[in-house]
Length: 126
Image (tube, rainbow, N blue to C red; front, top):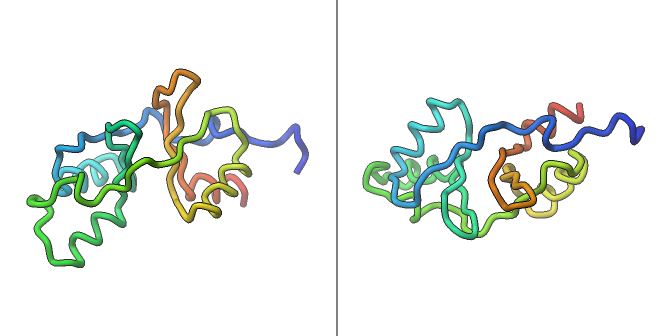
């Protein structure tokens, strides 16, 4: 790929970043994802955590009541983050290496500025 045509994360990420409290229920997380038409929320913990639509499906598959299950019970802790100025190809490599589909984007002050998903990467690279 021509270096002049390479795209940075900040050009394709979803922003602003949608977050949810660790004290919320999986039901609340599912409702937020549906309302925002997204498939992941960053959980406001330190280091950052994430809850995805796959986590919500797992609760349903286990025949649990989503309103009775805490986000903390199903979230993935200590997720990787990326800066907004790296290239989409680098994110694709990270996603493949770590087997993940979402990466929160943080600036130089470690503030959340967005989210990049495998869907964003695929759309950009195709």
